Image 1 (tube, rainbow, N blue to C red):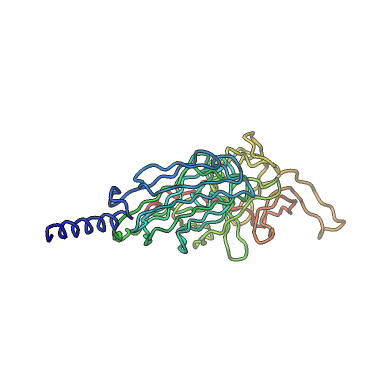
Image 2 (cartoon, one colour):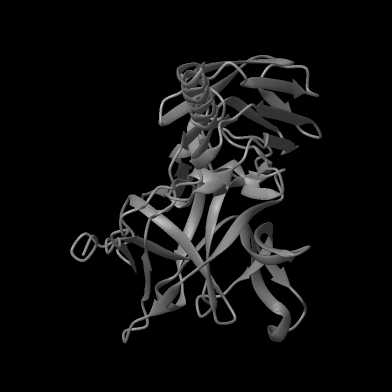
Length: 354
């Protein structure tokens, strides 16, 4: 009788131990990665270190597999996760070559694991028509069987979801101290007027701003504030962790004209272009105050009837408030060699990386 009770007790112990480990699935590893890949607009498939109770539910109101177009929403839900810790979530996505914006959220029960809004370029550094990772990195959340829900809302053009990867562990991870990244690049104002790759910078009151991307509906280009200063010689310097791809303009000079090319968009910045164009478009240019450059076309003399109201007007782009943003608006502006216009900054290889 005692032997029988002993065996029953041992069996109960093994069952309980098995249920505890791996969220009721003793076949799961102590650490693993689940991959949920989109296969249709209303379907996704699980692979990796998955248990019998794990399920994935997916639906995209665009009805176009992983493409989330403007005004549509995609939701992916992972069920049956093991008790323990979620140690990383990575979303693999792409945009169109030149645009794509919206919002991403990853929620587990009442806990927000990821929350992003803006453009795809804001999230990964540049627009891309190949999938790139968007990850939580070096964080851990206690999981007691809650669902994980990914929601993507498309706001501008399209975003494309390929897959979500979730890494889990039955123990709370201990992350080693993160090494401080001391590398940087230094951008310095250049007044040599030679062909090269430049950032295009203007000053608004006390804040320097850099142009990014190409024409938006043929009306303006976006501007981003940067942490730039002036040295003793009055030249602009910008020390940054990275130089974004959509702020890198290849500017090619000849004696009386200049071209502006944005490689990451395969676009020449031309005269009020509504769509990205790989065709060369030339501007005129003139040197101006503070080592700046005036880039223009269609210059005409404005005769206001007196010396006070006589000046040159040309089509160009310059800082302008647009709703809550500051943009480089395409408009007619006055040319005066004593005014300050665009300053061109290039990487100083002598000090970058230190």
